[in-house]
Structure formats: C-alpha cells, structure tokens
Image (cartoon, rainbow, N blue to C red; front, side, top):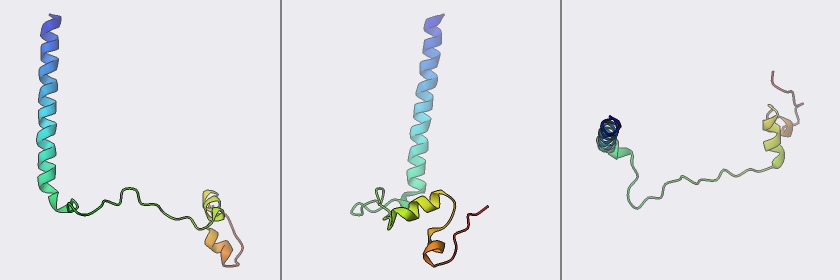
Length: 78
C-alpha cells in the first residue's frame, strides 16, 4: 500500500514538473520581446546614490528633508 502511494506521489510530482516546464517555455515565447539582447547588461545591481545621511534619517521619520533644506520649517506628516 505504501509503495502504491509513493508511486502516485512520484507521478503527480513528475506531472507538476512537466507542466512547469511547459509554462516556462510559453512564458519565454510570449515575453521574448521584453528580454534583453545578449550584449546588454541587466541593471540588477543598480546602486542609488545617497547624498546625505540626514536625508535618509529624515525620510525614516516621515518628513521630507528637501523641505528642511529649503529653509521652511519641518513639520511631520500626520
């Protein structure tokens, strides 16, 4: 009985893997125009420069550091 159950589970797993393979091929065919060209580098590790540590900590507290820099009083947003 346990062998039969394992056989069924193995078959279901194989069917799922095959279906995922088919779905992946369909997605590649459907969205091939969105993929980058072979010579292009993907911007996956793009770094966003931070000008001031003050800007980062200010935004963490819910107010905009640009407002303070412009000479206006800094009010926290509700």
